Image (cartoon, rainbow, N blue to C red; front, top):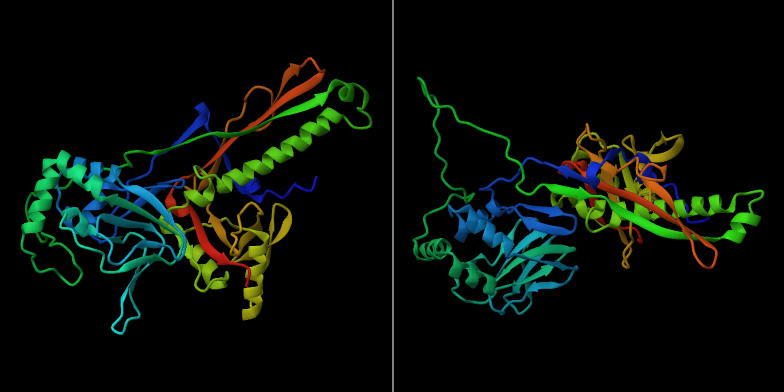
Amino acid sequence: MQGITPRWLLRMLPWEEARGGAFRVNRRLTYQVGDGIVTFVNDGAAVRVVPAELAELPPLRDLGDPGVLDAVASRLVQHEYAPGDEIVRAGSPLDEVVLIAHGKVERVGAGEYGGEARLGVLADGRFLGDEALLGTGGTWPFTARALTPTIVLTLPAAAIGDLTGRSAALADHLAAYRDAPRPPATRHGEAEIELASGHDGEVTLPGTFADYEASPREYELSLAQTRLRVHTRVADLYNGPFDQVEEQVRLTIQELRERQEHDLINDRDYGLLHNADLRQRLQTRGGPPTPDDLDELLTRRRGSKFFLAHPRTIAAFGRECSRRGVYPANTLCHGVRVQSWRGVPLLPSDKIPISATGTSSILVLRTGKDEQGVIGLHQTGIPDEVEPGLSVRFTGIDERAILTYLVTTYYSAAVLVPDALGVLENVEIAR
């Protein structure tokens, strides 16, 4: 069977029990209001904004009602753009707020002599069109164009009108902001911070607590299934020198395990490529994967256990090392000698996709529950189990004398803290 691969991801992940078919990850709530950048979280491919972070938009600053921010966050709509796509066009109505969740966006305006003038590049957490909240009309003074694969959340004018109609607090706040004189701001755009120090006597000490995310991620076990059908004549007569039913089951299990690794990497709900935190997705410096790029991945996290990349991506990295006169060392991993970088194994997986333009991704993982890393999820002890989390259940013989076995495996993966998983995106391997 040529489809059997090393399946390094399944071998390297530590597997934890998901009793009850689900595994909840309670994380500390992390955001920083006042830095001018909106913070997002993602559940698989679905991206949402931290409602309190909407206060980074000047018209919503100092809005004291958290419920209003929750309502605004619930009306945001997710869009994805490919490189070169226009997000907004100069001269079109300024009728929506655009929050850049991930990617790079270039602003282009009209030049002095009729050409295009580059007005700057915005990246993760920046925003456009916050004036649309004020309902003053106007048009976009520039064109915003995606430079990389980009995810944005938008708040259209219809949603703004509905929100202000439902919430008097929001309408009054926006009206006050629109009519208020603009106070002078510092060069950093920071609000005034009141400080007290050097006090004496019996002062009241501040209290604190560990604030968790309001909606913790709960990973439910996914599954892969198939029905194995074998004629009783084969099971009765052709079992020497090999047990044909046993061989059919063995090859079916191999195919299910291949699908399991594919889903752990690519599934839009729990796959690693889609569950990497937006702040842990990096871009290459010049296209091909270089030692500098892999160093950047390593410095973003502690205790990296292994890289995972397509074999063609590993070959492209080898070419870049040869071009620089650098020769990566090998290391021993599960009894197999593999290429490594800075002592971290660089393991192949053909399940990582390659785009039509010849780009791919490189993952780096810290693993283990004790290390707050990436873990695999399964449930053992299920009926008719033949391997951990995999069962082969006899379902009967039909009127055509066909034996049927239901082969099922249950699995998922969880990223316990954001910096446990990093992804180097848009890695050019066709150069």
